[in-house]
Length: 232
Image (cartoon, rainbow, N blue to C red; front, side, top):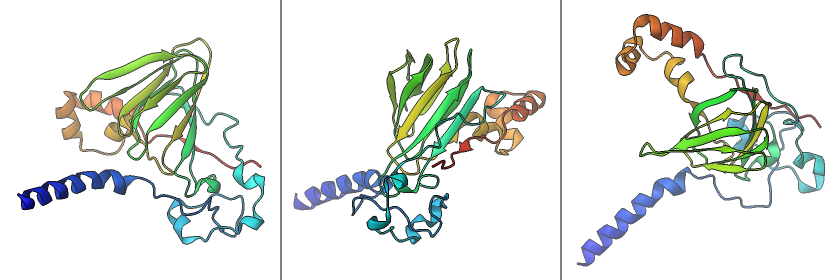
C-alpha cells in the first residue's frame, strides 16, 4: 500500500513538472537592467543572462520608461495589420520581470491580426481604440469570440489560437501584455503556407490543387512584425 502511495505521489510530481519548468524563473532581486556597456541600445535576448545587472545607483527613471509604442508599426497590405513587439531585447528593464507587451493596429474595415498563438505566455488584450472582433479556440475546438469596445479587455490563454479583426469604421488599436519575457509567436497562415512545408503534404491535408496552393503560398510569406526601438 505504501509503495502505491509513493507511486501516485511520484506521478503527481511528474505531472506538475511541465508547468513549473516552462514558466519564467522567479526574480531574486527587485530588478536587473542588464549592463551591456551600450546603454539604451537593443540587447540580444539570448545573451541577456551573460550580462551583469547594472548598479542600481547608476539607474534613473529613464531606464524604466519606454516610448517605442507611441506609433503604429508597418502595416501589411494583405491583412491591414501592424504589430510592434516589446521584449527585454528592446526594453532591457523588463529583464527578470517575467513580462513583455505589444501594440497591434488594425486598419479600418476588416484589418485582421491572423490566427496565431503564443507558446510561452497568456495574453491580455486591451482595446485602446475602435471595435474589435476577438476570440480564441480552446483545445476542444470551441470558439470563444465577441466584439470588444474601447476600454474592454479579453484574455487569451497560453497556447490557444486567437485572432482579432477590426469591425468598426475607424482604425483600431490593441495593447497586449504577456506573462513571459519571451512569449513567442506562431502565426498559423504563415507557418503552414509560408515556411516551406512539402507541397504534397499541404495539397493532401487541405484538399488543394497545385495551382490553389501556389496562390496561397504567394500570399502568406514570412510574418512582418516591427521590432520596437527605444526613443528616449
